[in-house]
Length: 237
Image 1 (spheres, rainbow, N blue to C red):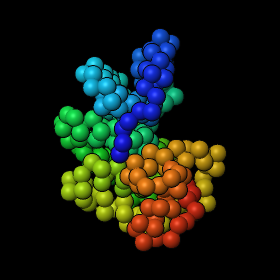
Image 2 (image 1 turned 120 degrees about the horizontal axis):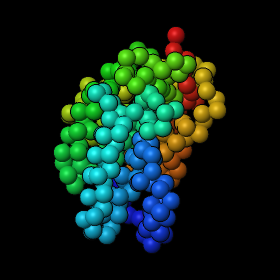
Image 3 (image 1 turned 120 degrees about the vertical axis):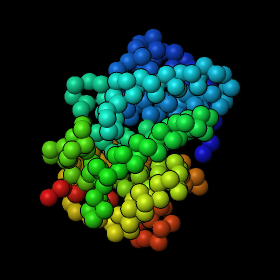
């Protein structure tokens, strides 16, 4: 994946403004935003070769572990209403850690350990990947079902982290995709269509030749020998 930034001056100005307004990285912790921010810091380091960006990246990881880290997994956000854990948030954070691990290998190892730890809680090999779990991962969050694209996210990120280290987890995600059990039933949250598009965009680096991120599920289906399908979210029963 190319990490080059097209307009670094613009990015640096926006980053400076966000710091001044206490938006990021000195605002409330939120795993999804912080994952993209971590990738941004690594990209700045690659383009500018300035050590401060790797230092900032490591500080961000420490802050996430301190504020959102739990004995198993990572909480959604710092605000009281951001409780529980989302699999696709975790997957994006693991992807960011993998990118940091290209420069400091211990972070890839940490990401693999987190993936192994949360995988069994979220994944039902017969049915799909649970969209949202309770904060201690003891069960599904009330009112939520199976994620529409979570199996795709897990499959892609696990392969980026380590084909051998996560071989069994990759196999389970692949079989879920092939069986199409994750999206065949009617949707539980139609209003979350933007969330599903957001998930698809995170997997685009894996399929570098695609012109549009929104085509990712269909492209990956073809890659795996499947017929493109309509992706939906299924209610847990």
